[in-house]
Length: 94
Image (tube, rainbow, N blue to C red; front, side, top):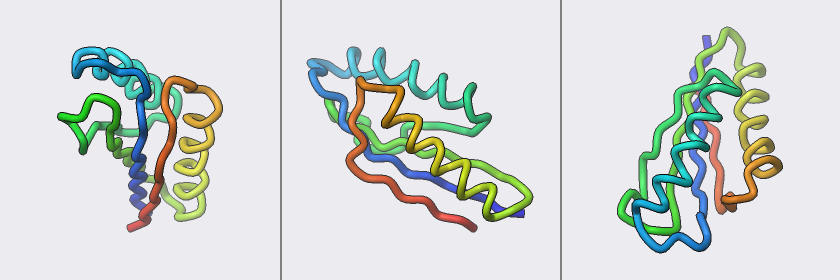
């Protein structure tokens, strides 16, 4: 069994309020959950208007599968979600 945690630090340019940030971030979190069947939550920079830290968690039977799936999340966000810029990413396998 392998537990993988992906931490993404993202920038959301142009946000003028926390309300606007939440309205742009919530669809991303929902879509990640639906597309990849992972648990997703905002875990940092919650009071900042234009940045966020998102955690994605995945449990699978093989380390390689977990690594590939979480790497796919990074690629997907960078390719299909132009509203955000990935500043940093980190994958931890437990």
